Length: 267
Image (cartoon, rainbow, N blue to C red):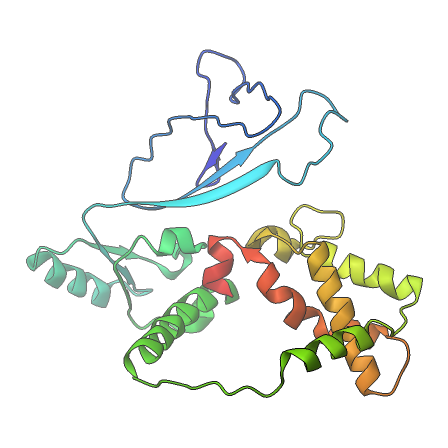
């Protein structure tokens, strides 16, 4: 188990840091006590390692992650490359009994779990070139998402939906579109696209492993292929192409991919 990217010794009486778990058929529950300590957001990762190779038929569920928040006194994070102006702000906040912590730009948190521990962030004469792209995205998305939440919940807009097609027409269209052909190599491409959304899988890329908790399933492949068949039929073709799959991959699979906490913040 890792706590904030650092290994946790689950068995101090043993030379190994892991704990032994005997599994039985069905649901297995293992409870461990991990002291978190400081206030703020904490990230936990648990790994299951079988005793020997080949003993686990499904290795995709051998990793789980979770986030938890420990309440406590808040603080303000002050970023000031020069230091003098930030120190004045820190003293003013201290006079108001507000805990202020001053850092340089190079010490700015690299992950959202560290950033979210601060109740407020003050940038003093700090150029965006001092931050990495990921750090800039963390700040930008936090502000944008907060504003969007306010717009959706306080504007008072009440949209009304109107029917455009009936049930019989939908069923007839479903039956018609299944007649569009798909070549074996095109079908394999669709399968690999969805498998690429599964973290730690054979086709997963670095971004998938970093931001995705659960990837697409066989239903995701079905959705991609059927949507591609609709596009081909509307284009007066009797078979689907790679471009058809690429066009509908995101619309068909996006909602089937479950992001981890960091992925939700950065998405």
